[in-house]
Amino acid sequence: MKITDIKTYIVGNPWKNWVFVRVETDEGIHGIGEGTLNAFARTVETAIQELSPFVLGMDPFQTEILVQRMVRDVYSDGGQIHKAAATAIETACWDIIGKATGRPIYDLLGGQCHRRLRAYANGWYRGPREPEMFAEKAREVVAHGYTAMKFDPFGANWRHMTPREEDLSVAIVQAVREAVGSDVDLLIEGHCRFSAAQAVKVGHRMAPFRPALFEEPVPHHNPLALVEVARHLPFPVSCGESFHTLQQFAELLRHEAVQILQPEPLFLGVLATRQLCGMVDAHYGVIAPHSAQGPVCSALCVQINACTPNFYLHEIFDDFNDDWETRIVTNPVKVEDGYITPSPLPGLGLDLNLEEMARHPYRQQNYLPLFRPGWERREGAASNVVSE
Image 1 (tube, rainbow, N blue to C red):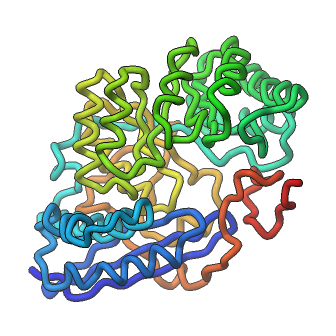
Image 2 (image 1 turned 90 degrees about the vertical axis):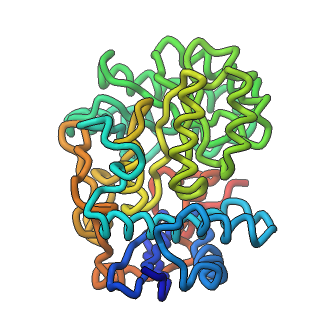
């Protein structure tokens, strides 16, 4: 079998343009992948097109050599953009392998370890940044059957907060806890906002409401800052979605301070993410992959989570997206009573709906402006006011 063509597609929605690929073969089997990266859709699409000549004519079963050609052999490190493009093609190859063998990808990466995957809801808190709104929306999440949810209560803050902003953020966490009761896990999203001192300070104020974790409280570039926060809080911190190499994870893990890792498979790669799961297991840690991109990424995370013994939680937006966002694929990931049942279908278990995708074109302003007031509404950059 040989790769004969690689096609790219961009699908626009107000909060993020999604990038997809379709890899064709000379045996008529095709595979799909995703390379979404906030605010860089066309850039990743171009990178996919530039990397395609390195793998055209190759056997899609040879995923390790394919990745080496696209990453090692070009010599330059293009960071997240580079890896998102390479992983989009790699994912499509795994989809092809699954279809050719009649097996889901999780059977090719170790076999199914979990009959069901516990999911946590994200993207549910569209609306004004007020405790009452968060509480109301949180009750709706629980009504859907979820036992875990993630949210960012911090508005557009960066590095430090005024007393008023800190009080409001803590009040939102308190309101959500009181709304959902003690049996629901609350995952607090930090979006790399704070200095280590501010993260520790607000973390201690949130501690009475028993967060399950504090995600990326500080930027990922300096792992010692994250280690500092982790060692000063009475509950776990987590990170990983911004890393794009195994070496970055190895540097963090050697400090034995962070045991909840959230790799982005679209940046790390399919096989590398599975390898990371073993690395984390060696440090008695657990894995909760970042799954805040499009529906193909969601399906890929299901495949990885299903075959990972130290799987923790699966992130999902789908119940709180617009209806059309799941119609752009066949057989989208579904959550029932807070759990996902991995599909037994070959490969990723879904395909692109090209007709529906064509109804939602790319728009440059489709990205999450996380440091502008009102970003929580997920209406894209055009409807936000620049912070003064």
